[in-house]
Image (tube, rainbow, N blue to C red; front, side):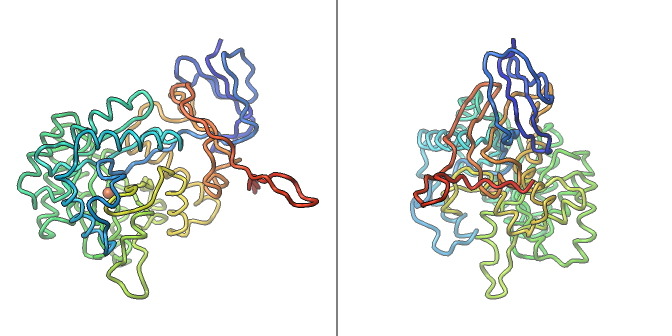
Length: 426
Ligand code: FE2
């Protein structure tokens, strides 16, 4: 007897009336109209069953700290970094753990079961590293938390950063981070990219650098990152995050750059909510959007994900762990409005970030972990339009969250008495 059988599901690839069979936490079969005895049966009623949402770029040490010790008055990246520096000495282990656990609750309720979080290593106590390693251990049954050793104040600009970063890796942090555009000079930025990639290659770690989060068209560390990736044989193991300067770069230069990024197998994470608010702050009008060139990167064959980056922290005062909100903003800012592009936006918060995190057993194929989300939508486009309610969330075949369907009762003469806003274009 199966542990769980979901039937009458629509899958993100468009297949309808599909059944998903689960045994011992894994998917054993995916087929049309499957009949089999199961301990529990879920009727999806034609709605979308998706693999879980994944956030490839987040800062779990800073989130939910909005207003501590003050708000970011200018709304700029640099004031946010300064504000985070003021807050860091006031952090406590218990408060860090409690805020992170709260956020993981929000994530699970939104069907997000994997997060890559950067953690600042420029505090010699490595308090946030200790706290998030504890959180990683505690949430492991229901959420994959991957940590990046992130030298927020610059791997070279802060004299202790590289040593602290190596200590963090030794403590169990998974990924090497960096911030080349924040180093003192372009040369130091390029040197930091080389050093950090060499460190990752020597220790068998993945790489994820904050790369060119700037409106400066000459911030070209992504070029160095692609070069070092290829030189060190790190293809498929490296990510450039933000890459907003690409928005402002010269088109001719970009036409050379994109094939190099694709050839090196470097993934890119765009963070639309945060970068549409942070970038272009030095502009009057016209005001640049500052999001990296998502459709062009995709067309060049680059794996692109959308990240949440921030929730209620020194850089961004909003957010609620909703990756459909993130994808919706990316869709709008990048003008990805064709049916195919909208589906790519859905992939950018599911399958694409799963590749970046190297998640084992992710997907809706036989043999994958039985992790999935039943959405109150008929297809990925409708899910984006409605930021669809996560009706049921499963992890290893067990229900970990559920929400009532979004609906309203109407009191209009001669009209239906409820609405749910669903109107599939299929
Ligand atoms: Fe970030």
